[in-house]
Image 1 (cartoon, one colour):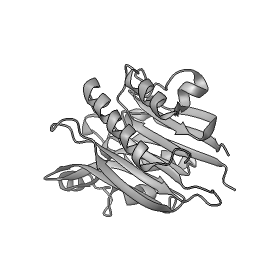
Image 2: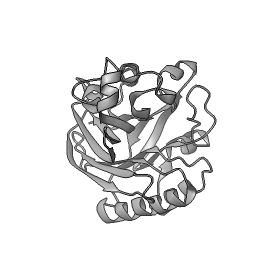
Image 3: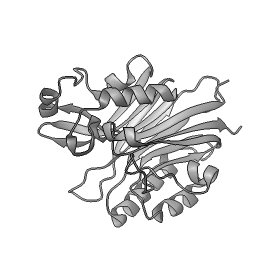
Image 4: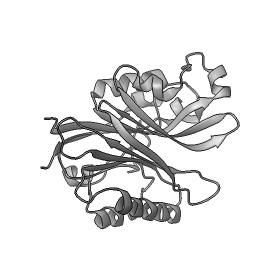
Length: 251
């Protein structure tokens, strides 16, 4: 029985480095593969962009999600959040187990910033209940984030059974760490790094992390290990670090 799950969350910055200087999707895929994660939560996945696909010779023909999943993650889901003339981007999930249901909900708090919540239901072999995952990328302003977290909370109350295993991960942009605590308390969640190491992880900027922007919240799991993947080499990867965790199912 798959009682242990390895997961990761990563804002890939649309597959390019800071200021769009370098196309880094291939490097990002190599790093993700080395984590051996069963499930990967991704933000700012740019699945189509006519200008960048011409500018960067290594741009994948099939789109960023299929390229990242490749032969490692058998299933994937994509939630298109921001659409513009050249293409679109949003949240995505890569899974080694079958995704049996997925839905993308608009949680935008302002017309200037399109944000979404990608909910996927995953059939993990020999589990009595499916795993519910929610991938999010919240707004830049505190009042927007509070509104968005209220939307996510209400959605979970309405669509996720209270006893179902649940993982919520992504870029919360919550450097003040205020809204996250109320969110966790209302849903009986634990933040992986806070629970395991005392505080949420520093994840931004990735080459010298200072701000605690990215989160992994869990319900129905114990934390075996949690790690921040960052450092000087991330200048060529993304402005966000990768967070990973090894979780064991509480049954």
